[in-house]
Image (cartoon, rainbow, N blue to C red; front, side, top):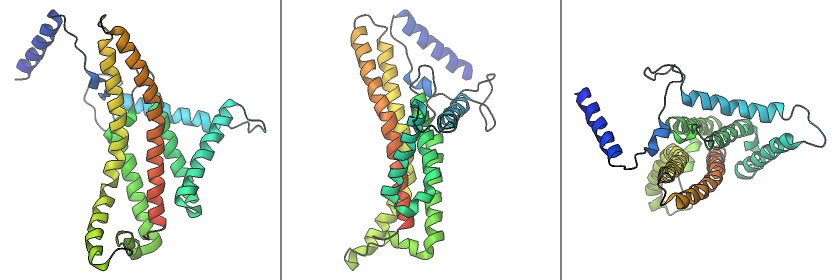
Amino acid sequence: MAETTGEAHGAADAAHGDGGGLVFHPMDQFIVEPLFGDGAVNMLTVTNVTLWMAIAVLCIMALMVLGTSGRGIVPGRVQSVAELAYGFVYKMVEDVSGKDGVKYFPYIMTLFMFIVFSNFLGLIPMAFTTTSHFAVTVVLALAVFIGVTALGFVKHGVKFLELFWVTSAPLALRPVLAVIELISYFVRPVSHSIRLAGNLMAGHAVIKVFAGFAALAAVSPISILAITAMYGLEVLVAFIQAYVFTILTCVYLKDALHPHH
């Protein structure tokens, strides 16, 4: 059966090639592959995802540790970028979560830097965008969801459930609103993870489609212009999605610290 399927795919590819058609697979860029050998991918396999996650971590260390080791009074370019990132995230946490949310700043800063570096590294030709995989973004979102939920119960106990009880609404509507609030609360990690991975996957796939059409001389100039425009948009999306993921984390942290409507 497998041989028959393989022969069918081979015949289809050959037919496309003989007909002079354009054959490209935009989703191939998201395939997880082992770095060494051609075996199956399991929990301990070193893959392209592992490699680019490690590169992202090394880049963050280079910026935040090595780049600020000199601590010059007049900062250089690398130190300026590190200080700008630090101040940007710190202000976000303080403004959204409040003063008592600042103690969780290190985790949120780490989260932001990992996502933003993973997003930008994925824009390098032949690189792998780790944050385009739901396996990565779901883990990040679940870590936030479980963390803030546990924090809410630890700090407030049963009173944390007041988050779902809308006291400003009429009494008759409160049970209905409580169910809606409860459902929306448990949907948080789903929307949190899908928003990040979906946007990055869609953008990269569109660029790949335009790149495939660039091989056709008739539409090549239009395709190149479209790739340039999409690439510029993806640079913006790479930062915006990291920002959105982080600010939503701050919002969820605020709900855990102050569970009152």
